[in-house]
Amino acid sequence: MPSNRISHDDLTRQFDLLRSNPEKYLGLAEQLVKQDPEDEHAYFSRHQAWVHLGRYELALADLDKSLSLAPHYVTHRARGKVLRDMGRYREAIEAFNRSQAMDPVAWMNALGPLLRADCYARLGEEKAALDDCASLPDQHWTPGIFGAPAGNKSDVAAELRRIAAKAR
Image 1 (tube, rainbow, N blue to C red):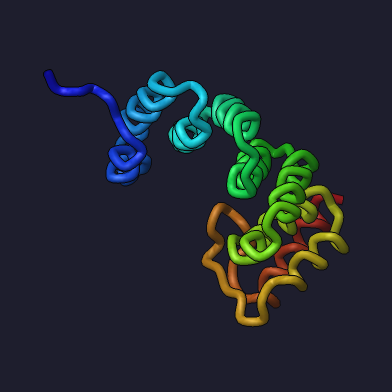
Image 2 (image 1 turned 30 degrees about the horizontal axis):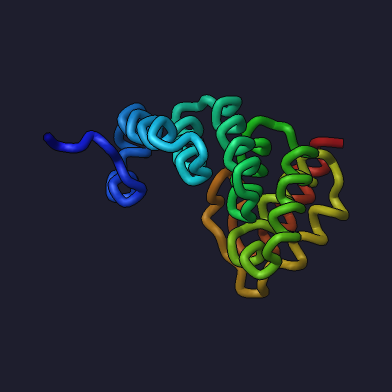
């Protein structure tokens, strides 16, 4: 009799479904959660589907469950991103701070300062936003991924100033 179990490898092979068919990806992730309700990775995977479906509260709940099972800097960063997407900038900053504290090197290499700078700017806190911007590598450039300011370091700083001024 064939097994209906799904593995993390199975889900990874289906990762493109997040964009093409997030409902199907959600179903696979839900299978993982049901198979092992103590698997933090299953909740993390399911949060990704919820985000693609615009169900941010459910995504946040899954990230909180994942963190309760095993705190990880990637999960804190993902939590910060979801909170940012929800407009809950102060809470997002707190999540980003936890991510940074757990792995400062990975934090720098994963757009952490850019995302947190965007949150500070949206709160009107220009100095804090520009401090994070200053920590970006000199060769920084981004196309504006996740709705964060685009361009090189100078472009990003100018956009952060504009966002902060508008928020004040």
